[in-house]
Every structure is written in C-alpha cells, then in structure tokens.
Image 1 (cartoon, each protein chain N blue to C red):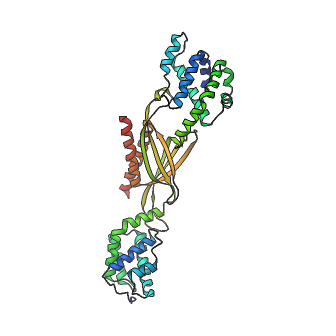
Image 2: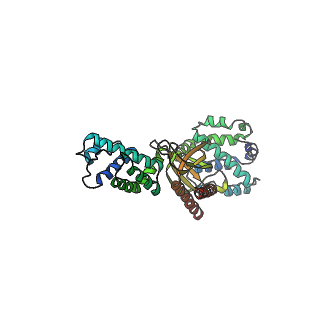
Length: 194
Length: 192
C-alpha cells in the first residue's frame, strides 16, 4: 500500500463495518468479473444518508487501494496471513473491524478471484507504454552487393501484468510497415465509434 | 572457343528451366534441387562434364546479375559483353537469361533480402476491440480498448506472441509515431 494509504486509512475509520464489508464484497465481485464495476456513487450516498461525512473522492480512493490489494494478492496466490503481512505498517493504522472484514472476505472469496485472474491472464496482456523507431537502409550483404532495401526497426516499451517494463524490438519492411500503420488507423476509427 | 554446348532439344526451354533450378537452389534455399536432378530432367543426353560446365557458367552469371540487382540497362550491357568474350554465351542464351531475369528479379531479390534479416521480424498481427471494465480509476469503467497480438520472431525460428492493450490515447500516441516514420520514409524515397 503506497503513500495514499495513510490518508485513505484515516477515512476508512469513518466507514461503518457493514458498509466496509459491502464495499469489499463489491470489489471482489468486480475482480471476479461478476459485476462490471463498483457503484461507488450509490454506496457513498447511502453512507452519507446514515450520517457519515465521507466524500465520493475518498471512497473511490479507498476502493482503488482495496482493489489493488486484492488483485495483487490474487495474482500472487497469497494466503490470508500473507495478505495481512502485505499490508505491512498500514495494519496498525487500519481500524480493527476493517482488518477483520478484509480477512473474512479473503478467506471466503479470495480463491475465486485467483481462478478468474488465471483464466484471464493466460494471454499475458501487457500494456503499451512507448515506441521508439529508426529507419534504415540495408545497402549490401555477403550474398548480395546491391541490397538497397529500406526497413523500419521498432522498439516497443511494454509493461507486463506484473508491472515489469521490458523492450521488444522487431523489424518491418516498407510494405509491412504500411500494413501496420493501416491497422492502427482502423483501430482508432473503431475505438472512436464504440 | 566456347565448349560445345549440349544441343538445346526444344529451343530455350531446358536453359530456362535450368536457370529456374539454379535459382531455387541458390536463392530460395531449396536443397532438393540437385545438379543430378537437373541434369536428369533437362539434359539427359549430355555428358556429365559438359553439363557441369554449363551449370557452372549459368550459375556464375545469375549470381553476378542477382548480386548487382541489375536493371534492364545494366543487364543488356552485361549480357552483350558476355556474348563477345571467350568462353562466353551465345546471343540465344543471352535472350533466355534476360527473359528469366525480367520474370524473377523481384522474387530473387526478396529472397536475398530475407537472407539478411537476422533480427526479429514482425511475422503477423491481429487485433480486436474489447469493452474493458476495471476499477483502477473510477472513470475507466467500460472503456473500449484495442487488444493487439503481434507475432514476432527470427526467420525460421519459433515466434513470441506479444499481446498488448491500447486505449484510445495509446493508439493515438502510436499513430503519431507511425506518421513520423512515414514522413521520414517519404524523404528517403525522394532522395534515393
């Protein structure tokens, strides 16, 4: 849990146990792909109605942190005790009831996320971070004195699901590059219309 | 004095086929096309020594032509010079070679290019657009993302499949860079 945890943990103090449990459950169901997302606005309204002063930004932050916590734990197949250890120093700042809820939720439902995450991560979808390129012309080689073919070398900077950043390089001929470009243009137009 | 050539039975067809066989072996890496196969198929009556000499001569010429990636002018000059020299070629043979090169120049040149691509190449690319739901930032629930799969690897070796996610901003970032490349390419083709 990062620097935000300090501020957020303070706000966690405000949330009554049953609302906190509901929040955790929703997050788990979201990670299980059972629901598309956590309805923070609706939950926030109900908490406010019960007299607690918490704003939606704070609730969202808390939800983010919990989601990150649970999905990281799922990816690393952590047991409940290991999960609590991950909380590290934040454990002492968390209200007892919050810790209790986290333990309970993880005990009951942690395994189901692990299974869902595994299935989804089979293809190891990484995030595109950046791209470097160079354009070269191969002039000559041992098998051909007059090669003279232009090519593009591209290096993609990629973040894999665990957050590790790596570079992947490859070469394209001009026709391949033109096709590559065309495909991305098509992608852009589809993304726009969806 | 040119060594006696095996009489071309049906005009230029065996020579044309011989050139094809030589190209298969030398440029397209086809190990099944052996000299014995060529002789048996195309010049069965010819004594082995004569066939070997013919094959060597034609192979050498084709190698020179391919290595220089000769255009039609260069080719004409080259072949004319060959017809004029000792142990050269006949003008009929020159015509067959010229026709062969016109038809196969592009594919032979492409093979030679591939032979010199030793680094990872992009072998294939597929993509789809998904509606992604995630919690990271509240405003990212149900955003469309492009999932792109790229097959990358060295020629003749196992590929790695890169599966990457691009949101609209990232696609635009990519498009910007690709435009830069295209601009550079245009400048390059203007100056070469």
